[in-house]
Image (cartoon, rainbow, N blue to C red):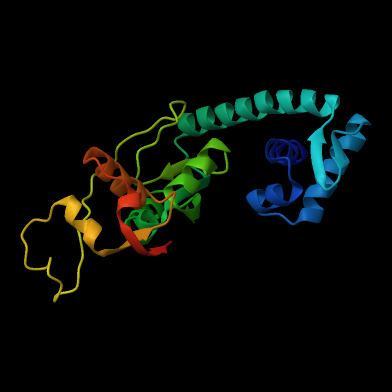
Length: 225
C-alpha cells in the first residue's frame, strides 16, 4: 500500500548504495534505478549526486528522506493497528540469526510459527552474531537472534534461553580423563575457535577475561566460521 517508489528511495538513501538496496529489497539493480528515476521525475529534481561510483543525497534528497522516515513509520503503525483490530496477521517477517541458532534452534521454531501464522512470509538471513546486530542497526531485518551479549543500548534485547559450552578433545587426549579442566591448562594445547564476531568466540573471550587471560594466550591452530 505504501508508495513503492518511496520505499525503494528510503532503502537506497539509508544504505547509500543501489546494489545493497537491490539485495535488501530482493530486486534487480535496474528495477531500483527505475523507481528512483520515477521519483526524481515526479519531484522534477535530482535526489542523489552520483560521483566516482559513490552516491550522496542532494538537499532535496535529504528532505525527502526525512519525510519518508515519518511516512513509512506511520504506514507501519497504521498497518499494525488495523491488523490487530481485525485479528489478521499477515505480511513479511525478516529474521536474522547467528549460525548456531539458525542451524540448531530455528528449524523447529519456524515450522511451528508457520503453522500458527500461515499468511506471514518468513525470510531468514544468517550471519555471525556481530553481523546480525549490524543488520538490526541498519534496519535490514525485523528481529535478530544471537548468542553473544549485545552492547548497543538503543536496541531492545530479551534473553530467550541459556546454553552451555563444553570443551571437546579427542578420546586419547590427556585432558579427556579429567572431570574438570582449569582454563589456564588450555594454553598448553592447540585450540580451535570460531571467527571474530561469532557469539561463541565472544563468550569464550569473555570467560578468558574473567579469568585473567585473553584469546592471545591460546594457541589458535584453526579458526573457522
